[in-house]
Length: 439
Ligand SMILES: Cc1ncc(COP(=O)(O)O)c(C=O)c1O
Image (cartoon, rainbow, N blue to C red; front, side, top):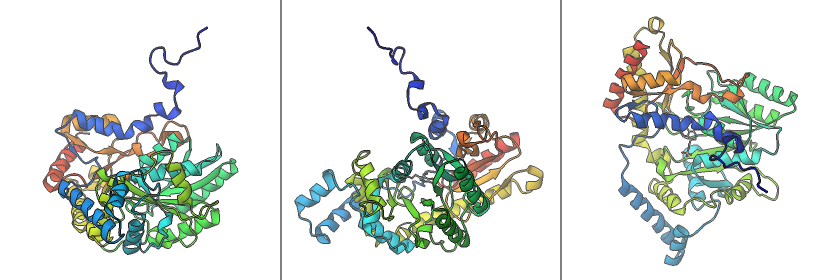
């Protein structure tokens, strides 16, 4: 007797998890794939950090600084230093105290280091948090939309529906949030948390004003939802001072704060973290339950990577603000260059129909254009003008739209200021302007 096989002509996609065939999960690779086919194209699409300051020698030095810290500050003998760096280690991480100190120095966030879980990138922190928040089919995530594709993709892997909440000019439309929570509850669903990037959001670049942050915290308390605050760009304001994070204002432990060192150390270190100080179960913290989940996913975050990140923190008195003074200047100039460069190339927005925002920091500018911004338009831009950018429809979850067919063609796109140097940015903007005129 033979049993039915799902592997007669290779694996049947429909026999795999639904996410396997979901175009949403191809979104990140789509841009890489186009860039790979056109190596001479300049990228205003990539949100990758500027590489001009990177030096492999910094990695060796940071590793030495951290090892010396273990010997001199922590009093470890050589065997313990070796074990700490080279063995399996503590699931919650080995640089949790340094991260807690950095949050205190730079953000005014006072948190018990035991409530900090060090993860393999912010993405893992996000994934683990969503994992725990989905108990059954009734649970849904709210996300300020347009949203970073990493959150919608992670939710998709976990069968957690994402309900969009309008962003508005202030980073979250609180009336829409109230409506969405009410609507979900009326439909028998449990909205568990709102995902939000209050500082220089990806893709919109919008920063949430401080009074709106306070109102959002109040609303979260009234409505009994958590806030998942993702903060990879907060240390890069364009000018002036930074605003307090939601976590710094959070007196009721409503906020799970997700951090990434990808932009403030470098992406290859793959270090992120969750600050999850909510008391729960035998606890003491939500971070402990996230750690149990982590022990079944990545076991523990590479201690070598943590040591490099830890060394960088130690070199700058646990201040990433201090560590990133040059970077902050580069990104400030980059945003100025894009915003000013668009103004020079499209001096009369009402005639050209080309408009853009002027973000207060971060990496991204959103441009409205008078034509449909499809993936095919991007293909034309790369083929005929050798310039890449990101269509904004990638930041909308098709499954969450009323028809399930997506938002339809949008007339906006995202430019990033981070990856290219000054001359390349000017050249990329020339190519972009030529593309827009031709379209
Ligand atoms: C909003 C947002 N969150 C998280 C991440 C990813 O962070 P990590 O590289 O630490 O996983 C990114 C990267 O682009 C991002 O834009």
